[in-house]
Length: 120
Image (tube, rainbow, N blue to C red; front, top):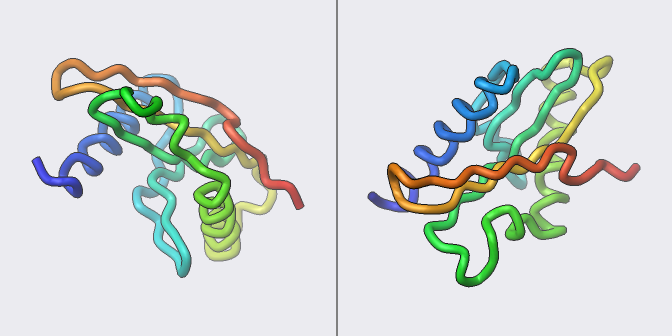
């Protein structure tokens, strides 16, 4: 499986995992200048921007640990673009990270709710 296919599979697994926990998908792979948001979901009254990270092995750190400060800034920028385009200004906003590790059929999924915040 190539890198793009693995990423798509990880996003599908994350979406299924989150849907089973009551979140509703709004959009996958929202692109804007400067970045991308893997999943945009609704959880009750909150709008949730989800970064999905996949690692086959955790020898060099767990998947959820790979969301750098620079990546967080890119996600925040994209979230602002999403809000401007879709007008969800009255919604509470949350940034979650889903880490997926392992081989097909033997995945471990970790969810970090409210993994980081927008400091304005």
